[in-house]
Amino acid sequence: MKTVWDKMSDAKMKKVMRFAEDYKDFLNRGKTEREQVRESIKEAEKKGYKNLFETEHLKAGDKVYVNNRNKSLCLFVIGKKPLKEGMNILGAHIESPRLDIKQNPLYEESGIALLDTHYYGGIKKYQWVAQPLALHGVVCKKDGTVVDICIGEKDDDPVVGISDLLIHLAQEQMKKPGATVVEGEDLNITVGSLPLKGKKENPVKENVLALLKEKYDIEEDDFISAEIEVVPAGKARDYGLDRSMVFAYGQDDKICAYTSLMALLDSEDVPERTSCCILVDKEEVGSQGNTGMQSAFFENAIAEMLDRAGEYSELNVRRCLTNSRMLSSDVSAGFDPNYASVFESKNAAYLGKGIVFNKYTGARGKSGCNDANAEFIGKLRHVMDKNKIAFQTAELGRVDVGGGGTIAYILANLNMDVIDAGIAVQNMHACYEVSSKADLYEGYLAYKAFLKDMD
Ligand code: MN
Ligand code: MN
Image (tube, rainbow, N blue to C red; front, top):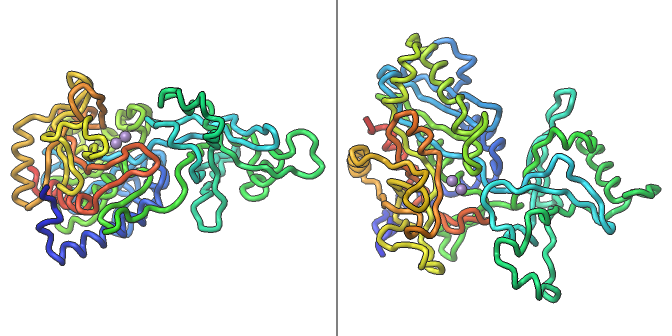
């Protein structure tokens, strides 16, 4: 099989490896949607981006962002053409499957303190046991203070985890189907075993509460207004003896979020059409809610921009949306030789073959899909070829073996042209996902080319 690696010059190889180092670093700084928003704003501000709401007037070349509740983010570079002529948009999601701590989580049983969780997104529950896990999130207190939590990432931090049944006593468990071998209500995080001296009732739980009080000044009730996410602990790693791949949590969809963000931040010239990067929450549960793609925040942001560009009208908002083009930057299923039977080899995405375009996703007869128009794909091929970008086309597996979706259809419903365009990963939604460094860089180049040349 020919891949992007085959024709790669030494100079490009260096850039690919350098880019992957920065990517891994960014993954380590941003495991949750909140951390991704924080780190993305940090990178954007370094490049001169300003908060739209602190900006009075917009003109060509201006760089602005809109932060929606610290969980989703839109960034823009104003183009030379009026906004009503549309934007070139890259849209990715920045949250990943994980376990969320419940509102009333802490209890003690047989000398062990545990936190109850409710999983988020599509996971194979058995993958989360006997793993080092970390706690990331915020505790919002009644007085308005927000306490940031990040435990389990520094080398000398403790980690937490979920116990697994020893194989010696798992005779009955091992006969269960994969979906129930570990059940959702059993995903309880072990957080302590040390009793607080002098306490008779639940001394281990009391000790954990005392630690939380001492370190973070939080009480048990504060879990009610907290969002603490349990994610795999530890850093992104090189994968393979040749270091050609990245092994990390949450690459769905942070690999496309990072490449989309960098494509925008690294664009040098003032673009013809306004460039936009959307980084959004809640994709893994259907994109609802005020921080998901279905929220009005994106359309509201366009209205605010038109206002500051002196072009606001409801009609111009509609025109801007209709005339926009979008790449829905989300990962594809990378062909896996261990599970070849679920793929159709001619229409599968392969690691190392460049950015992947999915004309449609969906399930069964493409139910729930966005189906990109052939005319749009024709134009896109021209942009890719003009910029010498390696791309492949794929479907998510063989017909009728499963399915999936992205935010593509939501923007397409606003009447713009949208296609799914992302990077292939193996082990999608597992604690650690695998991507190719060649695809990572090619994805970045593809997104840059789209922002610059799609008209
Ligand atoms: Mn995704
Ligand atoms: Mn996903």
